Amino acid sequence: MGAVAGNQKQDVLASTRQYLRPFKKLPTVWCPGCGLGIIQGAIVRAIDELGLDRNKVMFLAGIGCTGRMPTYLDFNTLHVTHGRAIPAATGIKLANPELTIFVVMGDGDATAIGGNHLIHAARRNIDLNAIIVNNYIYGMTGGQYSPTTPVGAKASTAPYGSIEPPFDISRLVTAAGASYVARTTAFHAQKITQYVKEAVANPGFSVVEVMANCHTTYGRRNKMRNPIDMMRWLKDHAVEKKKWDSTEPAERPEGAFSVGVLHSEPRPEYVALYDQIIERARTPEAETAQAGAPVQTVKGAVLPEPFAVRLSGSGGQGMILAGVIYGRAASIYDGRFAAQTQSYGPEARGGASKSDVIVHDEPIVYPEAEEFDLMLCMTQEACNRYAPRLKPGGTLLVDSLYVTECPVKGAHALPLTEIARNVVGRPVTANVVALGALSVLSSVVSEAALRAAVLDAAPKGTVEINTSAFDEGIKAARELLGRRAG
Image 1 (spheres, rainbow, N blue to C red):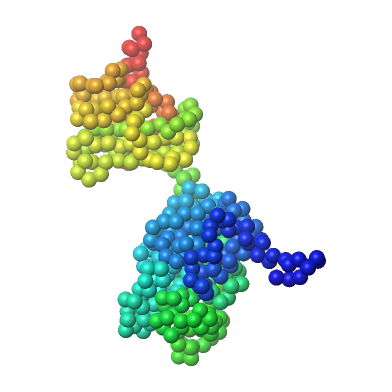
Image 2: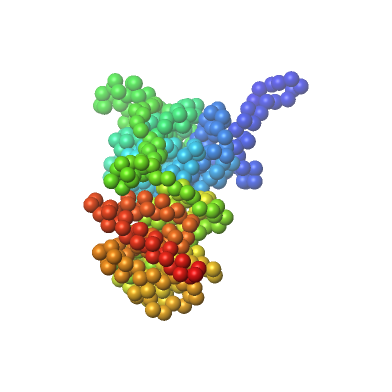
């Protein structure tokens, strides 16, 4: 606080207080003297100094004392299960690359149950900012030793001292591929702010490890019950990288650790590489698209609601592949959103097998449907089981060779398998014949998009036969509609 005119006191926290949720009860649930409050304030100051739009900031956390942090912050926030903050953040980043994403984790959350996610995020170099609070212990759940508990340190599950060598988090993520790694302590609050700002500026996976005090569950077992004692210990054992590198290991204080920017090596970021793959996917190989010419598609009418498709038959008839092709056509070539799910295990190998696709012009919130707008049934069993879930007014196509009784009036019946066997010459292309017919019976996914996706999936040397199968399906469907119109 500083004096200003009129004897009023300046609120130096005003710029950061705006980022706290006013309806959350403060002070926090953290123990008095906990370093998490210092760390939270330092992160918020970094966001404020960077001038980030709070509506484009995402804060995630898992389980633990550190996991409470997003509940106090007025950003987009997500609190997930133990160790799963990074995969959740990965999905969010892929869906909305414009977001600046912070993932706050404790040492147990990040390197034990979440350790696999941590190293693979580093390997991918996806643009996330991981803030890992390392206090050597599982603080919230009772003081069990964690993957970073020093050898000899006591915990509730190591009353005589831990015998397991600890992870060096910063070295671990550096080795795994993180492009920016820094370490500091809860004592050095300004350094936290500095490193968080540098992490945000780095286009890739950034890790800021913050050594913090947990005097309640770690300190009281290890002769540092007072938070001030622990803070002094952090200060005394933090060694700047330059000095650390120039000092022989034997000369370093016991328990000391290096601090500073420990690694900074920019490399291609994952989402940017993924976007390049999408662009490549939109231009098929020469064999499947007339010497690489771009596919020209005409998107159907605007979809005010998700459009649900079920492709069904017997395991082995290629329904799962047909669903993948349909979803690829909708998303890559027609530019809509699509989500595909399918049968698994024995169901995919025999009996009624299905592949569902949801298509929409907006992001898809839930990838499953109770009723379907468009349905294919290649067998009687599939028809009996799934046809009742066709929406009123929906479109149903059945294979007349196998489906002799259909509970839906007005269903379209075509000899799909006979066409594949007798006209195309390959019975296994019946699923492609069906896709050709569906492109005529429903315009939600364009014919050009489906054709391109079919050819993408065609094994080398089978382009001609798959093209023939698709064209025969189109021809049969048009003739069927012509007969009905006449």
